[in-house]
Length: 473
Image 1 (cartoon, rainbow, N blue to C red):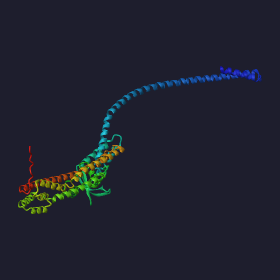
Image 2: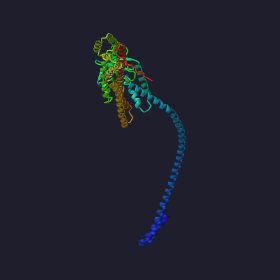
Image 3: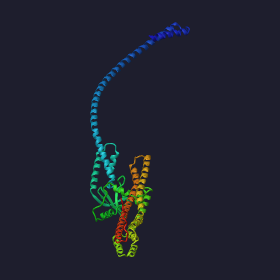
Image 4: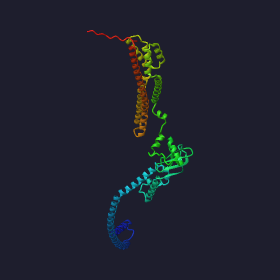
């Protein structure tokens, strides 16, 4: 209807606009025609609308049916999901319960593989199983759980190692010599305890290198008895063989051993003054030893002979005898007494004391110097130790205490001076004590023989007795 009204208004406007160009009849016919066409179109449109409405209802019905069907399927799926969720939860619980056990087994296998690898790295049998050790490398490189084939291979490798560790094998093979060259010679593996070799020029011990895949000759000086035993072992003369059962500690000590000169140099510059003191003290001790060996100790025989000369009134012969025995200190004392015959006892006593005092410097020569050296040597050693400790603490200040070996090495070198100082001072002190004891013995013997000879002179009247002082009240 709205369309029809629009057409009428448009026609009226057209008529008005055309200034009555057409007749009213024409306008009426035109309007009628237009009205019929509009009605026809409206009927067509209404028919289309009804058809579309029917299609839409049909589609809506189909959609509702599908929605209902999908809701039913969704409900079934939700029920299945709930059941699967319960199963998943149960499986997760079981997996969590077994996860610790799985991780424990995995850790045990990996730990066993690592321990076996460490065993091969430090065993002389390691190079013998270089190919089989790839199984260990595979297990250690994998992050997931190792397979049963790998576990069986690891078990078989351990059994093979245990069998080889209980056997002594002899044969030829290659190894690295001390100079780094590959050498071929006789090799004897004594289980997992050690290995020895012998070639045309040398013989010695073998040990595994850092990764345990090659045999290397042990560097350092091997004792002669050990080399002799190795040679006899290969020759079949002996069945026993000295081995290092300390896990390589003895071999390490052999490679790190220092010569005497290197050991002294590691002590620092104060070692040389200490050694100089020791050499000088040794020369002084040799001189004193030669001096005391020249002194004759048959003082009883000398006293008896001189006493006979006095009793026989042969004073000149007695003096001549003492001059002939001038190396005997007792003769020096008796000669001084013979010169005082006819004097008083006081004069004789003074002469004896003077003779003893005259002999003392000869006996005690260089002994104070030796005593001083015995005191200075350990003090120089302590000075060297303190100096070395200061240097060690300076290193600690710069680099910290992360390397205990560096600290222990510096401290051990610092203590070398103390060791050398004590090694020099102790023999000097012993020699000084022996010489002092010898001096005391000689002085005591001279005093004894001088007193005995003085008594003889008093008895024979050769000496005037000392008058006694008289006291009056």
